[in-house]
Amino acid sequence: MKILVTGCAGFIGFHLTRELLQLGYEVTGIDNINDYYDVGLKYDRLSELGISRADISSIPFSSNLKYPNLKFYKMDLVDQPAIFSLFENSGFDLVCHLAAQAGVRYSIAQPQRYIDSNIQGFFNILEASRKSAVRHLVYASSSSVYGLGTTLPFSTGENTDQPASLYAATKKCNELMAHSYSHVFGLPTTGLRFFTVYGPWGRPDMAMFLFTKAISEQKPLQVFNQGNMKRDFTYVDDIVDGIVKVIEKAARGIASTGKTAIPYHVYNIGRGKSIPLEEFITEIEKQLGVKAMRELMPMQAGDIAETWSDIDEMRNDFRYQPHVDVATGVKHFVDWYSVYYAKQKAPQELSVLDEPLSQ
Image (tube, rainbow, N blue to C red; front, side, top):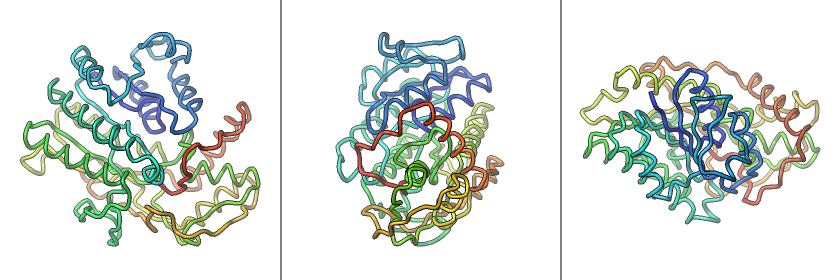
C-alpha cells in the first residue's frame, strides 16, 4: 500500500513515517520545513530517515539507501498545483495528513498562517484525495477543539462549537470540511483528536521541551494558571500505535467509519488519564536531578485548565491501548534531550510566543 504522510519532518509525522517504513509500507513524505521553530531539528529528523539536508537543498526529491521505500518532497500544502500533481503521479492508496501550522498562542500573533496552512492546505488535500480516489484519508485534529467545554472526560459526542483559539477553530473546521467530503463525495475520512503529545524529537514550543530546558539550565519555569493545570499527556509511541491501527484497519478493507451511512468518523487519541501539571514537572526534576524554580503565572490567552480524553471508541474499534506511563515517557524524553543537545548547541530560543500547554 502506498501511503502519503504530510508533515513528515514534524514531531508526530517523523515518528509515524519511521514506523510505517519499518513495517514495510511504501511511504511518500512531504514537508515545507518552515521556520515556526528550529529548522535544524526538522532536518535532523529527516536525517534519521536517511534524507540529507544537502539533497533537499539541491533537488526537490530525495530517496535514500536507509529506507529504499521512502520518497521525500519538500512541498508546501498551499501550493495547489504541486499537491495535485503529486497525487496524480503517485497513486496513493491512503493519506495520513499531519501537516499543519501548530500552536495556540502563535495563532493570536500570526492568524493568516493558520488560514493558509490549516484551511487552504487541508482543502487541497481533500480535493486531491477526492480526485485521485484515495481509499482513506486519516487526518490530525486536536483536543483543542473542545475549547471551553467543561464536561470531563472529553467525549467525541460533546459539543465543540466554542473554540478558545483560532488554531482550535481551524481544527474544528477541518472536521467539518472532512464531513462534507465524506457526505457529498463518499471520501472515507477519519479524524484523530490528539491529546498533548510528548516524547523524543518533540517540538521546542511544547511543555515537555520548555520545562526540561528551563530546569536543566536552572532558569525560572513559568507555570500558568498558578499551577492549577491538568493534562492528558500522551507519549508519542502510543499516538503512533493508534494511527497505525487506524491505517491497517483501512488497509484490510474494513471501514473504520461504518457506524453511519457517511464514511466519516472522529476519535479521541490520548492516554485516557488527566494528571496535574505539578506531577509532570516533578518527574522531569527526578530525571534531571535538579529542582525547578517555579514562577507562577496567570492563565494564558487561548488556553484551557484541563484536558482528559475518553478513548473508549478507539479501544472498541481498534483495540487501542496506551501503555507508556508518565514516569517512563519523561525518562525517554530526558534521555534523548541530554544526548541530542550534548552534541548540538543549546536549543534555539523560540521566535514565536512560548506556549507550554498547547495541544
